[in-house]
Length: 323
Ligand SMILES: [Zn+2]
Image (tube, helix red, strand yellow):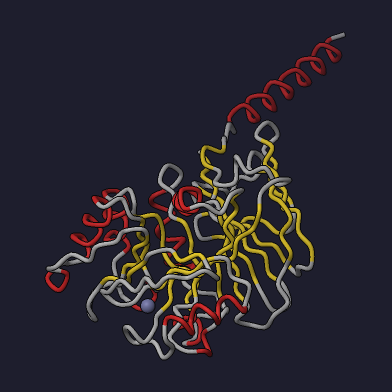
């Protein structure tokens, strides 16, 4: 009898401790850039947001640049000449007004949807530029962060203060051809470690086109329903896009949909033609494969981001915030 009571006691203790342990892990996803996407309705728009022409240090005229991107099936590009707005009329491609701000020694900042160039641009520092873009209701992101040796706290401070500063250029052909083939993911992770889960920093992928060897290497796939300016702007601002790169070849994975089950904690990547899917949190790989459950993975800290690698191309998703 005593033995039976002891067994019942042990069993109920075991159950309670399991329950307590399960209850302790209450991770919730508080930020999902793909949350309100209807995968049945949404369309995919190929976009390059960093392009130079002969109006600054590019080798091709604006008209030639537009026709080159049209031939590569782009829906939109932003011509972003240095400290100058190049905005020709175009019937064949959607042009997003853009500028790349910054003098040589400064951290370059790409600004979109903000028309006037301030007269005293030569005198403005990075922070004043970001303030100006915020005031004009433009959108900004840091270009090729790997080119600079900025302290991570320098970025954090600016991300905390300027709400229209939405991301960094993780993929940039200039950086990638100088050795960092997979781009500036290290800097991205260091920033995300400190801003997430509340403050997202989106990862952009652009050609930084100067000549034809940099045509259609990296791009952003914008997930929106109507190709209208407001929706494009909101899509970029809210991170409804992912980046792709074919710097290693041409064979890109085919991403079909992203399914998040908030109840069970499962995130599923519906994808074809890939070799490996990596899940990254706080700079560490926390899982491989098409599925991951953030409620059951103890290594997940403040965010989760996904890399889909194929034979010649790879895709980076924007980060999810986990609390
Ligand atoms: Zn540039």
